[in-house]
Amino acid sequence: MALAAAAFYFLSFDDELRTKPSSSPTPAPSRAPLPEGNIPAAPRKNGDAFLPEVGDRAGDFTVAEVASSPHGFSVGYAGRTTVTGRVTFDAAAEAYCFEVAAADTEKIPWSGDEGSGPAKFCFDDTETLPADMRALSSASATATIEITDYTKEYYGIEVTDTARFVRVVNQ
Image (cartoon, rainbow, N blue to C red):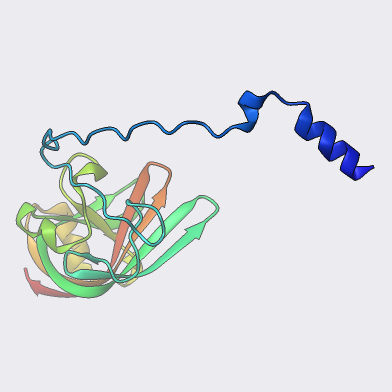
């Protein structure tokens, strides 16, 4: 019975459907230059040109962990660096943050497409932030600080950057 069904299936279709399609010519590559700032993506093990992989470098940090959650994913960076900028208080996040001076932006995992304004991260442990650092948020003074354990949390189009405060280098 199964053999009869297979024969019926095979014989009931038109020859046109049983033949392999003819191959089409491969399009010629365009010799037009890429737009400024557009870098072709290299093939990645995880198949996503935008998702960093463990071992990738970003500023003075190295990707140590990439973790997903039901609402997004996070990238944890290992490393340590010093940055100059100013302390701010982000009322929406209820956290002290640090706006990095333009000259030091290249030291942290930050890309210009993360929003307008200066590169910014919040301190992951605001409760242990020294009082003199908190006081800087009301002044326009700059400070140079040392940070470690940089993390980026991605939730849809929202990106939240955090880092662990180590010490004040210069105030």
